[in-house]
Image (cartoon, rainbow, N blue to C red):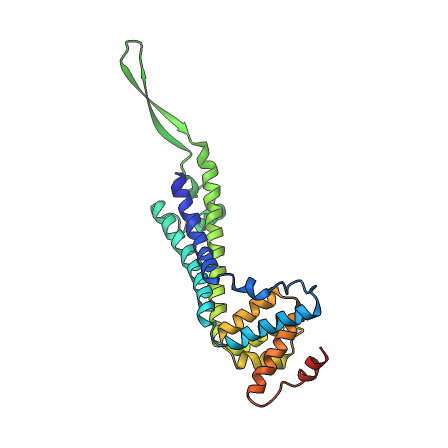
Length: 260
């Protein structure tokens, strides 16, 4: 029983395990303790330059890295759906509609309703006991046994049904969100601006326009972990380098970098 109970937990952990292997500590390595922002100005400038050099030299090369993360999110959705079908098979086809049946039972008239929880998890059953009688022969006794554990089990599986439904819907919305991000550069600009307001809009637009979705994903993850001021400076410098490649600068950023 314990081994069977561990299998679903392993399946839920698999996407995280895969991503930890594929990610390889990239974000932690690129942070270089810049999440604190308390190092000296000389050290801070050196680390910012190292980070900027990496982003510049590996620009447009992070798509496969990002798509593996999106694959893990897809695996999470497939796992939830697969778990529901496995449960349904285990309960002889009663699990897929288990939560709906329980809600209908609660709303139906008391005279007509049949409790689906009792159908799946019977609370009483016929038991057969064998014991030695007075003559020394084995006697058979039929009795009605109460199964108190099923009272707990039925509540657990009702919760699991709604929990799986919630996880499935959340995972499905996440997949739709990722699809929009992949095919809509405007959405990527909006999300960066919404999350990191210190970065100028012109810089964000320049970076998104001249990079790929994998670069956007890496920059977004870095922004979640770096000091906000340091992240702003790195984004502005990267945008200016991208703009300089095409013989023009990003408005309002050049002077700002010189002051910094």
